[in-house]
Length: 335
Ligand code: LMR
Image (cartoon, rainbow, N blue to C red):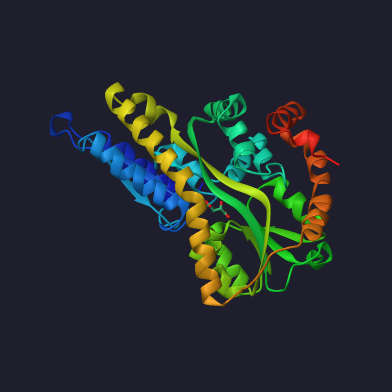
């Protein structure tokens, strides 16, 4: 366990002993790893504004963006220990906790569009997945979008053959590792905050992310080529420390739930536009060649990646996979 997580947890524990009479605001530390001007970064700021307004300052939300408090690999542990109260990790990152089912969202081409995604996140499957977090001391409250991912690299990626031997940064997800191997690429799990440096230093030669993450981390400056593949989805689960949440006075908890509902609507409304703005900025910069694959190229990529669904069936769970296919209509699309 990283020392700074332990130290922060004990500081929070000491803070809890502050005399009630002074009634300091309840502090919600909300840590995340992306830039402020991204769908998640903006939604976290929105939550802060709404939570503080709705509780008339009885709750103070401190947002720590860009991995400034905790990075990947630390933040979930910090939440379990109570060193922070709220996070929104990408769905891919819950596999680290031993909940591999969340990696169903990483399956390539599993969602053709947002209605298919919503059929999962806003229905019984999404709710059941969030409940899985409770055994880990976490409460899952909402799903926030980032968007559909594209591949980028230091060399052009047009056909499947172009991926062969490419060292690609992935998030810590068995499905994403299998996805890269299916293309003949070499996956390397690297924390988000270290990815730009890894690309710059040649440790990896490519990555995948929605455009907002790519551009806000200036990853496009260290890779000359982006292919708009939309081959997979990246979104978040907003999670809180369960003990903290349950110990809140009921009226405050309801106000925070309201602030979160509003922030979820906000996040999912701005995500697409935010990614489009970043794409426009990237095109303007001229730093990266943007390639839109032909229909034939996209189908070839899909054909190469679909076997990952079967390979990962045991990890994700046959029943969950079947339910997701039924909710999205995916089974009817398999050639
Ligand atoms: C990544 O690691 O690529 C993303 O999960 C970062 C994020 O939180 O969007």
